[in-house]
Image 1 (cartoon, rainbow, N blue to C red):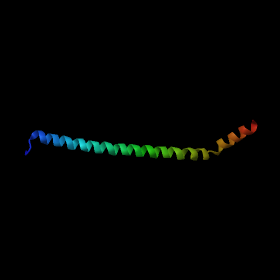
Image 2 (image 1 turned 180 degrees about the horizontal axis):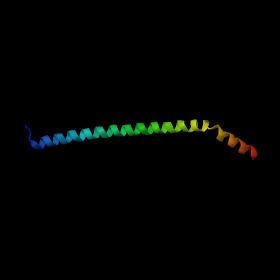
Image 3 (image 1 turned 60 degrees about the vertical axis):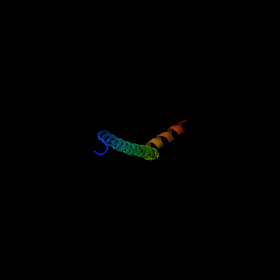
Image 4 (image 1 turned 135 degrees about the horizontal axis):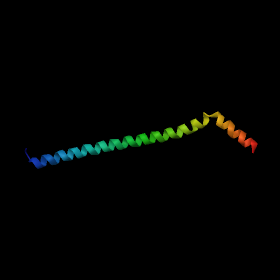
Length: 67
């Protein structure tokens, strides 16, 4: 080796560290994207679920009439 064994090991460690940081950043981005899409699905699913159950609406309307 031109600069010695310790320098080669330090270079390998630095490269491994850089790869680990990049992988962690990509994993974090994927988690954020998954979290945002899940939140968006939940927001759109609630109104759709409420609109798709007409029996609940009728039951609530009848309760309001009785009062």
